[in-house]
Image (cartoon, rainbow, N blue to C red; front, side, top):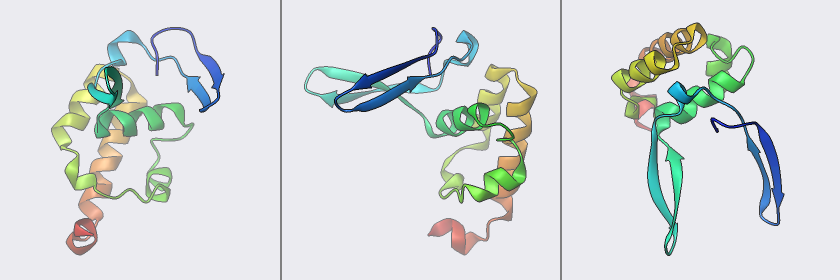
Length: 114
C-alpha cells in the first residue's frame, strides 16, 4: 500500500505491486528489522486483513471471508478492527469488520485454539 501513485516494480527478487490508499488509511504499521541496518514497515494483522478486503471486489461479503479460512481471528482485537474501520471511513470496511466479528463468534472454541 502507498499514499502515492500505484506502481509495479520488477526486481530480481520478484514483482512488487503498490496500490494506492488514502493517507488517512495509511496507519497500522510497525517497523521491523529485515537485514542489518535495514527496516521495513509491516502491517499489523488487522490492517493487513482490511487492506486485502479493500482491494478485493466483494471482499466484505461473509461468503468471501469464510472462503479465506482465516485462522487466529481471536488474536485480532475487536477494538483494533473497529479503530481501523473508523480510520478508513469507508462503509465497505465497516461492513467487513462486523462480518469478521460475526465470523469470529461463529468459530467453535476448539477450532479457534488450533
